[in-house]
Amino acid sequence: MASVLWFGGQLVLAGRLLSAEDFIRFLAILFSVMEPIKSLGNLNNNIQIALASGQRIFAVLDTPNPIADSPGAISKKDFRRDIEFRNVWFRYGESLDWVLRGIDLRIAREQKVALVGPSGAGKTTLASLLPRFYDVTRGAVCIDGQDVRGIRLQDLRRLMGIVTQEVILFNDTVARNIAYGSREFTLEQIEEAARLANALEFIQQLPEGFQTVIGERGVRLSGGQRQRLAIARAILKNPPILIFDEATSSLDSESERLIQQAMENLMRRRTVLIIAHRLASIIHSDLIVLMDDGQILDMGSHEALLERNAQYRNLCRLQLAGAGEE
Image (cartoon, rainbow, N blue to C red; front, side, top):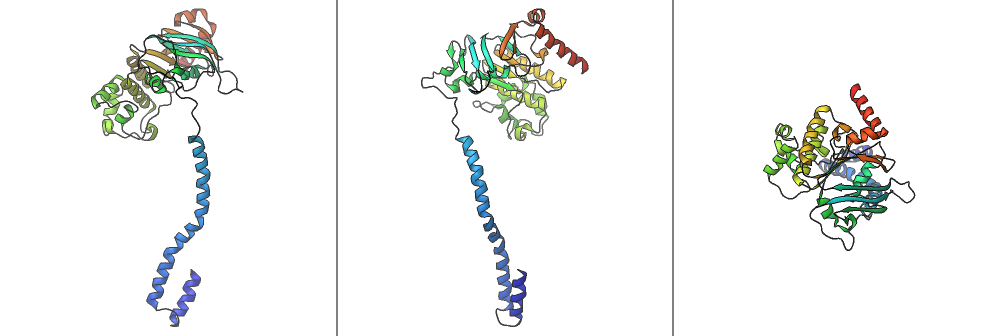
């Protein structure tokens, strides 16, 4: 550009090329096309980067989902009797070790069952088999005597509400996050669900109440507030089966108390499967199942396990020691 200015300027001054006005116009045009020309030079690099990224994205999107409706899948709209795990064995791959080994468990309708045990015992994996996040390797998981693999996947998951430690929220309003995945609900029904989840008070304090946008993954809310929104979502859905997977982990005492109250509101007259490390949240369960290394070691009430099972007593002792240090 400097060469063009110097050489062209000399010619214009000598009156041999263009008039001064035309030379200025030429320079303006020249400067305006330089950036697009440089961008054109980088176009091929950008295309190659985009192609490589696209291949990785479509490799994921095009991966077939092994969990799908079987050809003769039936429709099931209600839950009447029980859930059964019948000699369930599971592993994540043929070359990997067994995660679950010979699990036999029956959960009656409106029964509250807790899974406890050390990390890696297979508790979350066992609960994940019920909504068919995975399919069993051997055995069967049945609802009212029907293998879940023979139930339409959409109907199966509509029977369940799941509250996990990692809450999935979206960059949308509080009301739409609570109603996400459900049928059309009125604002009054959403508010009632929030009240039962002990979330109404903090929602009303937000700048725009239920119309407040909470940010990607709910970043504008605390951990306890996010959990209460997840519980409100489950209350609004009103499913007959509930799964709580570490719903009160990593929360302060006040948030845990509020969430425990919300969970009690949600669990009334429902069948509940709870996974928890904090035994205080499950000691009043109808049945506590002690697991380790993918197997059921023992099951019974809190008092019965405390009396007869040394490993359960040790878990309780460790919990009490941790609470004493806090």
